[in-house]
Length: 219
Image 1: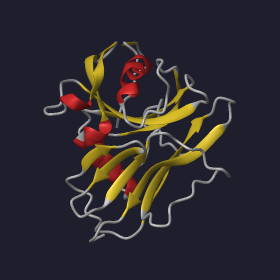
Image 2: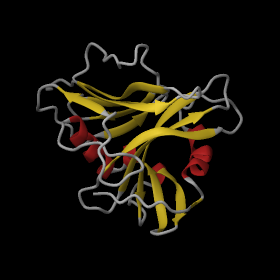
Image 3: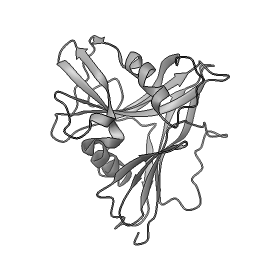
Image 4: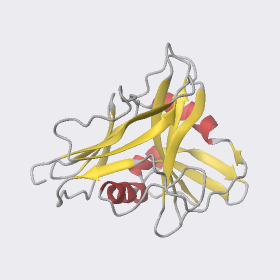
């Protein structure tokens, strides 16, 4: 079980993301710096209790219209070998000391727990309260044997794909779209999903797809 520490971070997560987000191919903002606010998200537990896992939603108001982004992050007490390209930045945590923050799509601990979430083996946890499930996060997975192993993360202009050797794909929606009627609509070929909620600028609560699972040749 992850323990949520309500303490200081220097720099803050939003400060790190302000520098990092414009470097992503799926970022839709303008030429100026992002203007970010925390809008929602959830956490997953690391079974070993070593790595913090957070799926954060931030809203950027620097463009023509506010845009919500899904940012999976991991927090580690030491650098992750071979993941220098995925480093978002380092922070000083008021309780835990130096923390290395990574784009979680490139962290095997987050990827393994995301697979477990989709398959129904773990529960999404509240972003701000220890040992509290998040009832707004939904998931599904039809069938079995989807071979969600040896996943490779690839960014494009729409988001991030975690690709398995057999062609099975976990697509993370980075720029979020609120469901029109409050109920996320799955693509016809989807065999699984994760959906969640976040706050819009007008104070209302939106629901939308975070992750979609699509089959491969042997799924």
